[in-house]
Length: 347
Image (cartoon, rainbow, N blue to C red):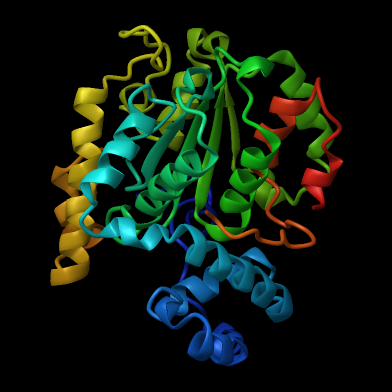
């Protein structure tokens, strides 16, 4: 299968070269003391592939990658998203179902590349608990990071901004940790960020930040509007990014089916699919089954592999600077007209 964008950037992190493996081992040695004494539970999570992603996120700078991982280890101990890749307790399931019931954040399936597609729509926020919201986001991102087909390790975030309003922007505390989760704790997991029907102010922001972030990161941003879809150009673009079933994966252009929910979202259909994805990952972890077991849990729009010839939470100190600035686009949008947020770009 041929993509119009680099697979290594948007779909699957490549294995380290022999030279890069030396850097990986140096980073592992640097982390060995804290893993043995403080974060024993994270040894399994911090494998070569994870170390490689953090090194890529920091342009193979070992010191910066080390700082990034140390922050992430603290965050993972506080939120512990890995526990969700096991059997959810009844209390956790009820809490997450409540967070998910309006479709403010949900997983729709896999695109043609095998990436998990995550839809965000903050206009249908239904809860107020900071911790419940961020635990749920950690749960969804952990599923997205681990639920790709055929060893794909990146996900797609589709943000529906059709009903964007400053009135439904999250509090600063929630916004800041959300940004840190997307840019630091899940390093090199984002394949594409699709912004659907953004307000006009966004285009001003996009023009401003274009020269502040590297070309590789900027290329992950896709802007989609109903106007672009009506010309046919939007459909062509999304077929390239997600596949021919892109509308069923994103619910773009769909009507609101239940008052107070995201367009096209039906909780009684989507939530059981999400729980089945959790079950699949549990089976994969415990029985080491083939990742293709995930194919039956969501609509699978990815081809078969090429070899078949078919196609109370502790306070965390935010790192000094986020190199992976892509998710700040949403933050800028949310706070553009109400607050000065330069500190979010360089916390």
